[in-house]
Length: 381
Image 1: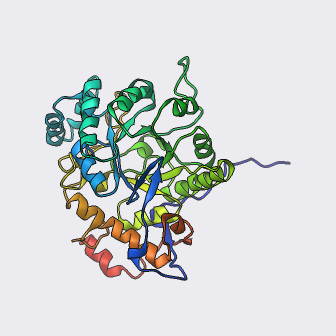
Image 2: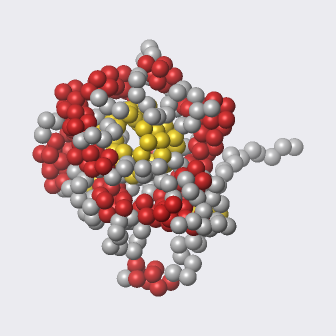
Image 3: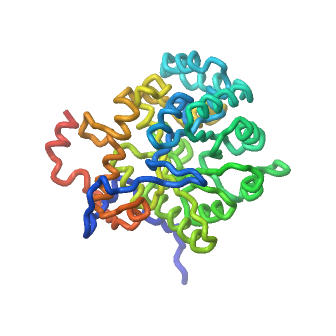
């Protein structure tokens, strides 16, 4: 006789579940090279600012580029729909909790203006930095040519979940293998969390892959849909796909952990898990230069029938340079993120980001509580 077959669950790990083991050789942190490459572009720090209206506008993108990173502007956000985005952002910041979701749905139902898109891209390019822009799959065919003509350098095609095989009622949807051949700039897609899907996406010709479904501070996809994989496990799987694809094809695709990163420790764990770079939203929305007026919200917040995201009050903690480069005025790891990465690389003996991929990691759920009774009491009080 045969017993019933049950669905088997595998264990997945997030930032709180793991720790990085120090290396057998250490180096001075100032010897650590934190640069990463995306297509033909090389950046001195492995940080992208997320395509969120509360985090990135053209001025912020310029500042991010000057500091060595890359900011992604949402072409379907307020800057691509309104000639006066500052007035719209003021409305969002001033709305009550009860008013905000209907307001989002109204604001983001306005038509996308090609002229506004071109103006934003021109502003960023006038700042002499690399210009990256984001669109959703359903608008890619229409907006990508507009962005390229305006001078965009990198195109991000982003949705809650992205696969290379999508079934649709439409005659012919977005096929990444064809799209990557047609467009003249590097394409980054996301988001993904698994080995097989990541491998199939890399085979289409993309230059970068965003990893993460629902971990962002302003995202509620995990609550609304019940879908997601903790970021450490998701990054490890996608990094394994990158390495296998590089072995097969001789081409390296950047893996970018997107969402859920709050501190320098989270950033370091992402890189040790295999990320070439990270994408940050809320941590950068806390910068003085961010356009969100102390708030942040997700790209799915204005969905007309199933909003997945919430406006969160993040406050303002310091300048963008202080958050990324220090000096830190707090002890919680939310400032000087690159300094934390350099220090961790030094402790692990990693001269490059790829060296840091080889750092040993362990399952250690007590890593943040062991011996920290007084800190925990202080937090509770």
